Image (cartoon, rainbow, N blue to C red; front, side, top):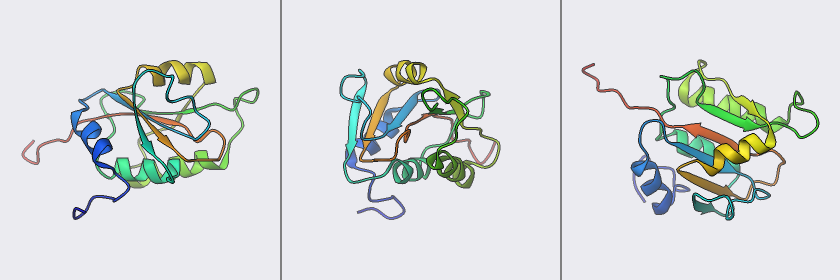
Length: 146
């Protein structure tokens, strides 16, 4: 255990977050997501909800504020404008950790799969709520002297 680090952040996930550079992306996906066949390194967080994983990751990793979009979620198939309750939870966590300037951008299912397949890593959770999938673009930590 370490002070100030959420215990659900496994050593493997901490290493991935440290290795990622500015502009790299990480996907947090639900239990239905085909993570193992997607391509990137998969970090399993069994027994953890996607919302818990998002909050823990954003406790350490900044979002990229140099680009207009830094967080995406999967659209509901056949109803792209439909909201799922988990989307509001994602937005609330992002706002609490990063402020109100970041939007959660919807991506069509196959566009989401494609973007996730290009991510640095995929965090596979035990999230059972449908559409519990989000992609984050890593930002920078600014020097306090800047």
